[in-house]
Image 1: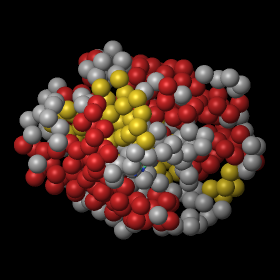
Image 2 (image 1 turned 90 degrees about the horizontal axis):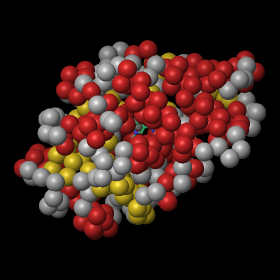
Image 3 (image 1 turned 90 degrees about the vertical axis):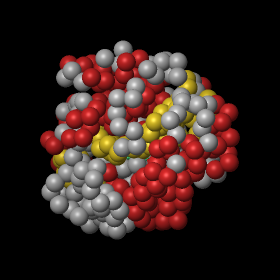
Image 4 (image 1 turned 30 degrees about the vertical axis):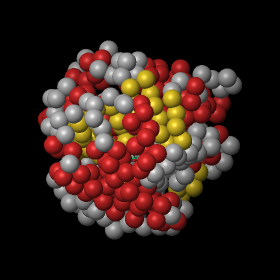
Length: 366
Ligand SMILES: NC(=O)c1ccc[n+]([C@@H]2O[C@H](COP(=O)([O-])OP(=O)(O)OC[C@H]3O[C@@H](n4cnc5c(N)ncnc54)[C@H](O)[C@@H]3O)[C@@H](O)[C@H]2O)c1
């Protein structure tokens, strides 16, 4: 059992359910006995984790655009969910340079559209809205960002995530705070990695594609550091926040950071090297360093997660090595094993993660 079994039998709407995080969240919630409803614009990649895990057969799914306020509202009114996890977004930094307007409307207007629908909810509903660590104005200092630090940024993606947070805050104070039936929280997490991500310009994806074709991996920013974390880490944070809000044990209307351990801040080169080793390859013969990145991206952004520890008893679980091992295992099964049961493997990795967290006596595992 985990999360005090509160998700069992609940109707849960996940926006962005066909994406990377949405598919892992769906699998975890299905395993806990929830009934899942999805609202997404498309299946964002080929291959896709949503299709690989055959999730369309296991859930109720609706294709729609989050910016279509009426369609979203109708869907929510029709299913009357007990929980909403909002993950629908234009989530790719490089795409924000090619499609800035689409990024702004999806991430900002799309969030406002959901908030409008939440205003119309007349039943008890717990809402967890996911933004990003990029919501913070990155001044490239060495300290982790706290929930009270300034939002915003110089690039479109950061601006869209910062703006989404501001809009959430305004809706909260103007309307939702006075709705006794709604519990709401915001979650900010950083770069996630894990099996089944095939999004454009994500380093793990470039690596495993190259490894599977026996090609060389080119790294444009080998020294860039990222606070890598397995996708299950922020998901355990989102589910913990949902549980605490539902049980009225967390402050309503608050934002929380969910980040990895400090030791997980590794360079892009270190991650690629370690994945190559796990794949059974020699890094020297597999990796080529090519230097400059083609678009401006801030080099350091770390989250301070003291608030999640203090109020939710949450901290991340996996060590960097465990994280890399799980990722290599998932993609090797996909690319190298004929007839591999990826749904089963994904469930097994979730079970392993819960077991590791239970060893560390994290409250959510009860
Ligand atoms: N993956 C990461 O490293 C990372 C890091 C920080 C924050 N996040 C945030 O987590 C959330 C999920 O990220 P992900 O990696 O799963 O993204 P993803 O790109 O894999 O999936 C995006 C999902 O949103 C849906 N979507 C996009 N535009 C839509 C629209 N206009 N209407 C309805 N649905 C739409 C897609 O169909 C898909 O289901 C996003 O808010 C993202 O910004 C992700």
